[in-house]
Length: 166
Image (tube, rainbow, N blue to C red):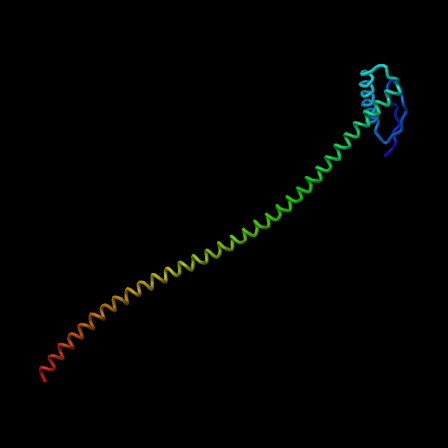
């Protein structure tokens, strides 16, 4: 980055500075420093200029260190949140994989259920056909049983008649 040559005014004194900062940033720094000087100067007007600069420097360093500590805390918090987010994303991926497995299982179960319903329907039709066949055979059996008894009765009657004729 190019060096900036600028003149800034601090505590009513001009300073020529060379910096990597832009002129706007240098003016912002000078403004903030002048505000600190005014605040300390208004608290006690008997301070000499050098003492005022030292107190201002102490305040600026205090502000800097507080901001630095706050930044470090935020970085730690950011790292914690980033780690938690990574864990949540991993859990989300696992849940997604489990969901896909469950969907595949459900699809397979539905396919198997469809096959079983079709098989059940076929068995119900076969059962109905066999029930009709059983009823038909029972009717035929009843008819044959009746016919058999009639023939036995006739035969028994014929035996009696046959015995009488002999």
